[in-house]
Image 1: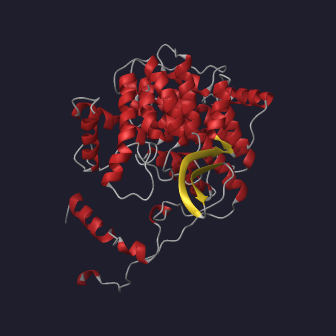
Image 2: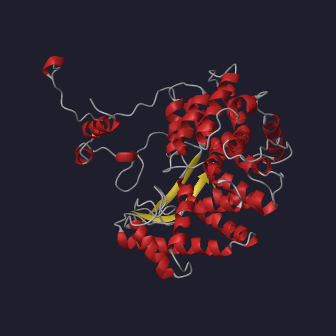
Length: 445
């Protein structure tokens, strides 16, 4: 007889694998080799990440580059920002259909998304308002799976039907996320309940802020920066955890709603989409722990304590620093930082931006002194995104759902790519390291 602690100890003991066996059997833990290179599991034409280049026959780290359908994401962002346009719909079109839209194509695409940006009758009342909870990602998954029950062709995996399903999810994700938060905030936090209707004339970023704010108001700069955030989070190669999940689950032949719910479960993890929340929490702890936030020695000492597992959550990490692929820089973080400075100045929070800037500068030096690293360390996109969302008065419960509002586009593109090109289920091999033994009769155990 024994309680859960007894069973847990047994579970830990019997499932522990000697770490040296991974080397013995040449198993790439995390599907990455010792240099951080991913094991090739497929081909894609949707996006590409560049973190190193061959120079004189040797692989050398380089400034990070991210390409959507072969176009540098910095050029994409410069394109719509310089023309004072919102980029989400234009870049979504590019990722889904492979080319930048002509003006008439973009207008038609925007109109289609506006047309399908609606939920089934009474869906908010019957689904979203039922059992509200703080975990917005689980609420989002529940809503997605329930939408499948309203779809008479939910299991039809032909490309036209899957594309229709994906475009509907792209259009309604802001509604599902924001309505889910408002219901939680009302029923669990005893605050007022706001259920605004989307405006068909507005972009995804504008509608997200309109739905979230009690008075539906937002500034042009706020909408522009949220739009940029959505574009930068929209896609990041086929190898990130949630996109790989999309490929794996799609390969089984299951329906779109099950695939997206699986991807949401992956994105929810703090090692993936939830990382920006940890950055914000880390900075809150820093502000409580350091007396002079302008003193580089004091801030540096705190960062050292983080690495020594003596501060914050004692995990030995400086959140927002480093990336599985990038080394010298994350191009998304570089783009974000420019507008973060502008937004922080407008909102009277420049001193906090300066603190982020200081940590970004000090952290790589301290990590380099304390750890043996095989590649450079730089700020990743999560370093600034949580700070931006907080300035935009986006509640922390919605940080990861905002990521999902963007990444549903990338998941959709990869689901379609998997269905169009593959007819085999993804089934990687695992090396067994157990010893065979004979069955023992129950009386002799």
